[in-house]
Image 1 (cartoon, one colour):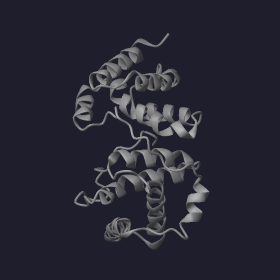
Image 2 (cartoon, helix red, strand yellow):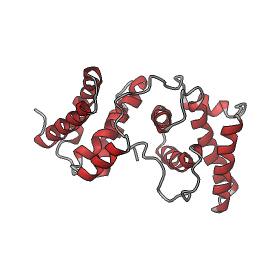
Image 3 (cartoon, one colour):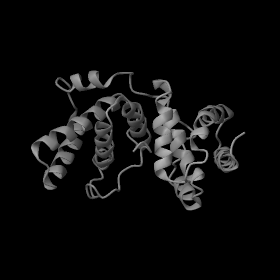
Image 4 (cartoon, helix red, strand yellow):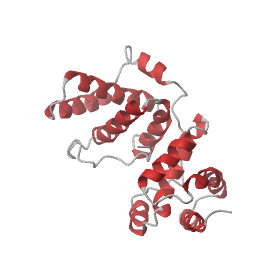
Length: 224
């Protein structure tokens, strides 16, 4: 039987989704994920670290084609589990609940394939502008050549995953991130990728006014 704390969080979460017009099929898919996820949260402290560790565990058991749906559900459910009413309200106002999910996903791949493709990859004018803006911001912060190269390669990997996306908003960015992050098996590389995608987001949406490293980037995941 589901722990009362988690059951109350699920009930509140589903009520809000229904209020926003979520269909029964979507609710069912989310419930399937939560059925697996909730046991990892029971009796855990209401802390982001506990939540992150639970996601780390469950993502290893989930097929790649539902990484995004699973991480998205975890992202949405987090403020309910934390019992953070203000965060729920803010998340709702900002359109954080994805009741009309994109059908698009990057083509299945591996980290090696993406890395090998960097040597021959071509980026269009807009992508190049984003990369150049990010490069300049890193240089302005005093990045050395190795750091610059490492971060730009990670940004390029994300751009490769974004090719063919039907739009250029936060939703496709999250999809690309969610389908790329689990490809990183070494924790240090995963942490660096998380840092880069949060920094790079402001340049990808052509909003570089936010200071690099100001923690104003997109909230893309709780795997950290």
